[in-house]
Amino acid sequence: MSKTPKLTDADVVNLIDCAGSGIAYWAASGHVDEAAKTYRVIESSVELAEGDAPADKTMTFDDLRKAFVALAAAGTLPDWQMREIEEDDLGFDATVGDLVVQRAMFGEIVFG
Image 1 (cartoon, rainbow, N blue to C red):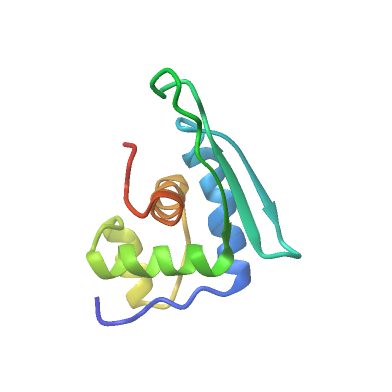
Image 2: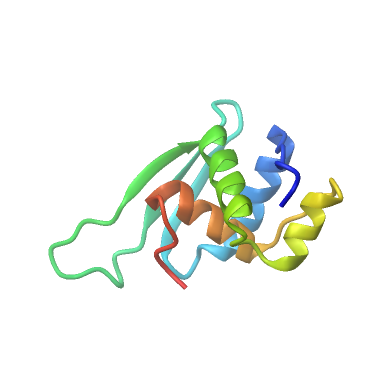
């Protein structure tokens, strides 16, 4: 990747919108606060071992930006997304949203 992606606040909101359906298989809920520029996600307890508490984290838009850049730098994003970064034409889907939220929330890809 030769370009470092630069996500605007509007890009982050679009990414979060896509993430809503992408994280549904492991997250119980997600709530965006555009004024505070945060995204709170609560992990579902369905897959947790007995006695484990679900993760509950509020991420800033900057946390999500950093996660996106880290995934892009590692080449972890889908090929089409990498092409869009090179062309300065960012669009997102549920898979990309899922990857970014997992990276921001857990520091790595945990599910799927």
